[in-house]
Length: 340
Length: 96
Image 1 (cartoon, rainbow over the protein chains, first blue to last red):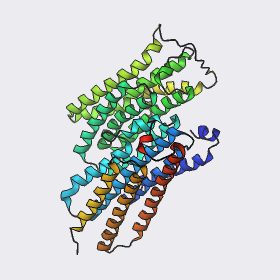
Image 2: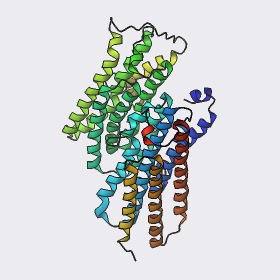
Image 3: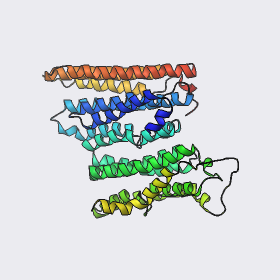
């Protein structure tokens, strides 16, 4: 990521990236809710210069939409903090206040029902900015969510996340929007894992960000933004195999890495008798795997779509792709050696 | 002595600011102004809150600094939008 920024003569973006990292740390490690708000504000202030580029019409609209939704969410968050502060011994309002605080944090994350800005903005960003938006920007709202959440409200939001994330991606042809809806779906899993334990959330988040990194780096190297670019004749077999493995891993199929955190969450769900929620988790995962497989199956049959006008030569930088395939396939087994 | 009726004023100001933010406007500047109005209502709330508890007002100043930074960021995005689109009407959004 740093390499890609350095090659584009953008050393001022390095500065903002540095502040972005620190803003999350400020927000997580603060003693009071006010410090959390300060971290979220610095997060917004440092992410906007990373994504705005005034020569491009699309990025101006993107940064505007991002700014409006995020600033509204953080101002609402601050107001709820103040109301919570002013009503210290009045416990009747706890439900309402926790619902409002969780809502503003969910709006910052892009979770349903506040998700409408998310696919729009993802459509206007480059792949590296998308990676930052989908992984790093979710850390601090989630950890703040874990400090004061309302269980019933969050379970309702989780169900909405899963359903919207799975059904919303069915009619998409843009790869960025597809990954955005998949991100909304995975947010549902992650919010539930927060309610189980923060360790499990960290585990799910790390594996999710690793999977997204592999996918996004593959799309970035091939400069692919839409689904019709996937049907390329000259693509190396290993690249196609890597694409298949990463998509199935993201969907949560068993031998791949992405199955592990979902397995632990389902284990918890079934032990504690959350049967209806398990049903919704399962069914929405199936819909997601359906549209992943729909993308990649044709390139793996013997008789696949061949577009002859694209030349893709990727002979030199195969090591990252081979490494990511290896990690996706073998990490379920390797992880049993680590956690011994 | 806490007067509970004053909380209604703050909630009303905040709600009105939010209402203008989500309403259909012709200009982007109205939206940014509504954000500043919400910031103003929170400033008032914070001030009265800190006065009633007899705390120091340092936090209020920190809040003011961050809100001003955010307001200026909004204005810079407005300027960038005018440079690329020519106006700040919401109707000229065609890309997303």
